[in-house]
Amino acid sequence: MASGIRDKVAIIGMGCSRFGERWDIGAEGLMVEAFQEAIADAGIEKNDIQAAWYGVCMDEINVGKGAPSMGVALRLPNIPISRMENYCATGTEAFRGAVYGVASGAYDICLALGVEKLKDTGYGGLPAWGSTAGTLMWQFFPNATAPGLFAQLASAYVAKFKIKNEDIKQAIAHVSVKSHTNGTLNPKAHLRKAVTIDQVLAAPIIAWPLGLFDCCGVSDGSACAIVTTPEIAQKLGRKKKDLVTVKAVQLAVSNGYEGGFNEWDGANFVTTDKCAAATYKEAGITNPREEISMFECHDCFSITELVTYEDLHLSERGQAWKDALNGMYDRDGKIPAQIDGGLKCFGHPIGASGLRMIYEMYLQLQGRADKRQLENPRYGLTHNLGGFPHQNVCAISIVGKYGK
Image (cartoon, rainbow, N blue to C red; front, side, top):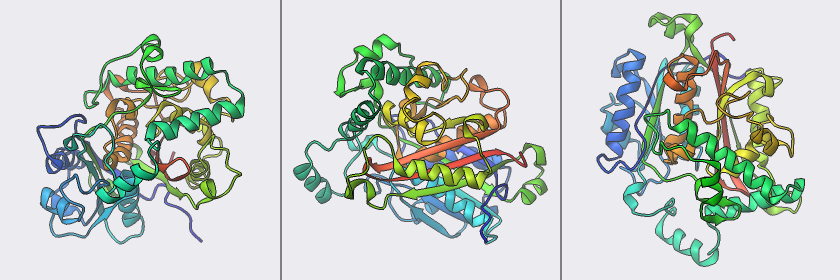
């Protein structure tokens, strides 16, 4: 019977490029920037890596969709490389592949890397998946913008729980202010300016109730992880008590229920709810509100983060907006969220985001997060949500110290 991967895989090295409008560098350069940090952190040679997983979503914009793109950029030693794509969960999907490669016993040391180069398109949002598909989408679904779709999530949430408009605006504004405040402490973030509640509330409305500061930006970036077994990590000189290990990695994909039936009320994400339950079970967590120390969730829009508090079983249904206003998810709150600034401050280079989130959890658990450092974190959770509100994929990972 399957027993999961808890403590079977250790992270021995991670790297993250600076995110932003990187006109100075291509996708290859971003990969090299993240990889050089990771390989130095791991203290191994490039030839020690036996297999790799390459996460990139918008392949027509990047260096290329095939595995050779990564192999050539990093000059990897002719090892197996698998190209991954799973909407906004692409980075975590690459991590899952590398983790499973080690946990299965097929390889000793594996690499997961995600990258996305979006700013060179000259477009303010995410490019369409192919020119023909993009043209048809805008012909048949002219109002199906990302802000518009996620604004409907807000409307459904407000209607379901009978929340006043001014209350939801205050709550999501608090979410945005919190993340932008955190981002000021991160030199790798794209946006590093704090904003006030008044600024957020006075910003232009993009799709009610989402204003300008409630929407994440578009960035270039890359992040990667090097993983192995705890036993090999110790042979490489790592102390057992200091090892950061993977407690769980889970994925849940829509089956058509949300869009094909009339039972779903549009006020939450079915995939996140189910994925969270599976992840906690694999990690051995029974009370996430008390056991999770920190997390990075997919805050493409502030309402998405707010609803995710509930789907992750951290806030009670209909109560997340109150928890947000009470500071539960602030940096000095009970369960800090988006400690590094989140998508709000990093933007969302799709292939890189999931690994960038794990990078922050890794630094925090090792006590290396500098001014962002939290006190004695135990478990760190990351969450990605990709696709559309009614048809999406969710990926969740949990990492922590070995044996704890």
